[in-house]
Structure formats: structure tokens, C-alpha cells
Amino acid sequence: MKELLQNIKEAVINGDEDNTRRLVEEGLQEDMEPRQILEEAMMPAMEEIGERFSRNEAFIPELIIAAAAMQEGMEVLKPRFSGDDSGSGLVMLGTVAGDIHSIGKNLVRMCMEGAGFDVMDIGEDIKTERFVEEYRANKPDILGLSALLSSTMQLMPEVIEAVKAVDPSALIMVGGAPITQEYADKIGASGYAPNAFEAAHKARELLA
Amino acid sequence: MTGRERMLEAFALREPDRVPVWEMAFNEESIIKLGRFFTDDVPPMKFVQQMTPEEKLKLLSTLFTVVRELELDGITAITLLATEPVDDDHVKDGWGRILRVSEEGEATAVGGPVSEPGDLKGLKPYHPQQGDFLMLMAAKGNFGDDIAQVLIQPGPFRVCWSLLGSMEKLLYYYMKNPAFVKDLSRVATDYILEVMDAAFEAGADIIAMDGDLAFSQTTLMSPAQYEEYILPYQKEINEHVHSKGKLIFKHSDGNMWPIMDGIVEAGYDGFHPLQPQCMDIGDFKQRYGDHLCMLGNIDCTYLLPFGSEEEVEQTVKETIAVAAPGGGFIISSSNSIHPGCKPENYIAMVKAARKYGEYPIGS
Image (cartoon, rainbow over all chains, first blue to last red; front, side, top):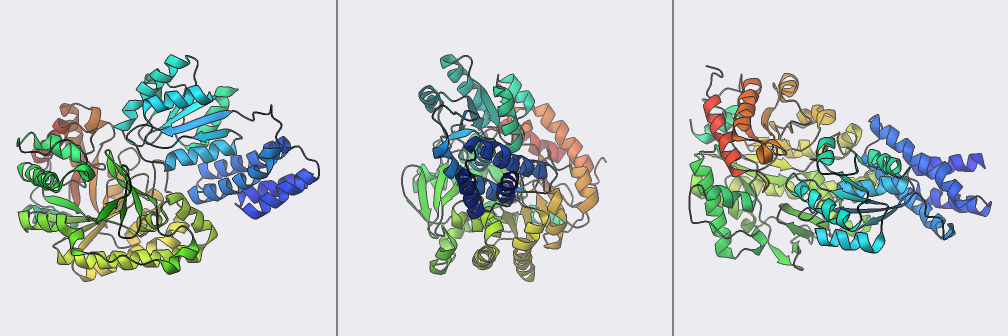
């Protein structure tokens, strides 16, 4: 069993989508628990990619293929989770109004999924009212706001205020090129991370 | 010296009479706000895709007024590929790329004619049309050789991902299908070479090779991936540009340190915009100042949007003191004058460059 988990981990790290799917199916046939496969093979694989990333041994292409393999494995695992198994939690992501940039948010999505979160990506150029509507309708555990421009980041306080008016305990993370910890503190965000891997760590920390 | 001579002298890594001032781009809103300092005849505030042809012309003439009044040493044109509307937020260009338009910046490809490797065979290359260079021709007609004519052209990396409609997709194929990435890069490079020839015909002196290869922490791809998938094509383009007696510099935001040796090897004449958050201009001058003209470095993330005019002046003074001695420095913002930048601060930046930029520096 240990060897199979190790092989799944390797397949995800190598971005081998076909092998990931095959090995996850094999694990389930051997009566492994879906959550065990996720937590002992797939999530550690993404952690490993994150560590390589921080050492400049892996770059975005390596992250992208690992995330693709992770997704392939999740397609097999997801239907097997029991109804009350909510995983690590639900993260909702969106880029604020006026900002059409998607890559930073998409990388955060990959890393959040890699950390076992369910992710709902509501897209780019999202108006404040839409963030509030989606928050109300889906009640995410964490809302993540992205902005690439120093002009659009100025909309973040408005979104935070509007969502907190609906749910004062809402956990709202912010990120993107112009954002700093200082800015996140100033606008009352619950969390900030300088890159996608650390965003996933921060999200887990906030929900711990 | 004329502005053009000043810019060319800086690219030759020599001291002109004063530090040249130039800008990579101004958004519509920035042009209009800056234009109001000099004229009442500005177009209504909307983004270019929503303007009538008359309003577009007025926007261009407002830009020319700003460049003339501020005595900038160069002007930057973009290629204006004809597009047809898809819906309120999207247009389609001659390659079949679907572009999402935005009031906060340039249109970005969100869909391409090549969605998987098999599509490449059927791809009908787009060939540059004279109309694509209307902005460059208008700038040349207006300013002649008084100031440098710069044309922005996306480089092979950006053209490749725009044909796929997604950068993530291209980076995925870096790992999964190297042959396809090289075939796609060939198509992109052939197109870029055609654009170069047409641009020089239309009057361009300098090419700004656009397309970010880095973000604030590091490069998007590893140095090895850069050397395999990008560098050879950049080298080919740069050799072509030099064979025509023209200049070319690389633009990329972010922390480009890991691949800067490659940028030199590719044969670029300069590098822009030296984002101050991750590229120290003093270090850069020491390491690459003998090879590359430095362009940029005045922060447009915090300083120009939120700083005071006094802070802008101080930063310009300090930057010139570090970067300008010996030549090889052209001052500009650290990306572009976007709608978040205060127009007063941009004007303060230009004035400070004049005040502190006379050679010899510090005299």
C-alpha cells in the first residue's frame, strides 16, 4: 500500500496524468480510502512541488502539469467521497472589477486544489455586487481576491466591506503583484500570501 | 541634440546631452487626463474600442500634444490589428484570436486559433497589413526624425501563448510536447520577422519586444526552458533587426535576474522596465551596464499612483544619480502610465528628469 501511495505521489509530481488516474483507480480497487490517497499521496506531491518552487528547482510549467495530474486523480476520487466529507473547505476566487488578468488567480486555484480545497473560481473583472451575491449563495470558507494592477487593487477594500456587511466573520484573503502584507492589514483582509503555494498554506492556517 | 539622437546615443551606451525621457505606454484615461493640462480638445473618457473613428483620431492627437508639450524624446506606437466585435467585451483579430478588451490595460487573448497541437497544420498565418502600422505612420508623419519612433511588438513567447489563448496552455506544452512548442514558435517568429520589415518601412527606429517572462518572485519558466523555447527565436529576430541597422530592447516585468545572461546572449540592445521592487538598477548597471541600455525604473505601482510630487522628484534624482553616469539610461515609469498614476506625478517625473538629468550628472 505504501508503495502505491508513493507511486501516486511520484506520478503527480511528474505531471503524469494517465498514470495518476490509473494508480488512483488501482488504489480504490485495493480498498484504499479516497481521503488517504488524497492526503497521503496527492497533497504531499503538491507540497513537494511547492518546496521545489521555493528552491527555484521547479517553475510554473512543473506546477501546471502537476496540477493537471492532480485534477485527473481528483476526478476519480471525488465521486467516492462521502456526502459529509467536505474536504479542506471551499475557497471562492475572483479577480476584482476592471482587472482581466487571470494567471495569478489560476495558479492560486491549482495550489488550493492541491491542498485539498474545493475551489470555485468565479472569474475575472468581478463587480463587488457579484462577489456579495456569490458569497451569499455559496458560503465559502474563504474568499480570495486577486488584482494585478495598483489601480484595481483599490477596489479590494470595497469588496471586503460589502462581504463583511453580509458576514462579519468572513475570511477574505488578498493577493496579486502590487499587494503587500502591509496593504492587506490596512484594508482589513484576513490573510495575504506573496505566491500561490503560500496562499494555500495561509488558507489552511486560517481554517485550522 | 534631437530627442531621437539622444535616445540613440543612450542605446550606444554613451552620454547624450541629457538623460532621455520616454514612455512605453499611456492608457486612454491617462492620455486624456494628461492632455487636459495642455488642451481642451480631448476626446470623451471611454476606452478606445468604444470610440468612434473621430474620437480615436482625437485621442491620438491628444497623445501627440502630450509628447510635444512634455518634450519627450521618443514616442511608442502599437500595431493596430483590425478586429471585429464578438460581444461587448470581446473582439476577434486576423489570426482568429479572441481578445478580451479592458479599460485598465491592453486587450488580452482569451481564445486562440490553435487549441491543441493538431490545429497547427490548419493554421492560416496572418500577414501584417499596412493598416496595422497607422499609429506608427501618424507618429512618424507628425514628429519625423525629431524624436525616436518606437514600436511595440509582442515577442515569440507572447505570440505563441496568444495563439493558444492561454499562457498556462503554452507552459503545459513546454513539459508535454516540446516539438509542438518549437513548431508554434517558428510560426510566431516568421510573423514577427514580417512585422519587423513592415515596421522599418513605416519608420520605426527601435523595437520594444513585449511579453512578460517573469513575475515578482522569479521567471515564469526555468532558465533551461527559456534557453530551449525562447532564446533561439529572440536571437534570430534580433539579428534580423540589426541587419537592418535598427535597435531592439526586451520588455519584461518582474524578476528577470535568472535569465538576464540569456537576454544579453540574445543580442538585445536594452532592457525595460527594471521594476524597482525586484530589479535593483545599481546592481543591474554593474552587471549588465556594459551590454544593455537601461530603460525605466520609476515605480508606477506605488510612487506614481500614491506618492507626492516631492517624493517623485526625489526618486528621479536618486535614480539618475545611480543609473545615468556614463550613459546607457533612458528614464521612464516601471511599466506604463496606467489610469492609477496621478498625471501631476508623471509631469513631476518628467520635470525632475530635466532638472537632474543634464550631463555631466551632478554638475
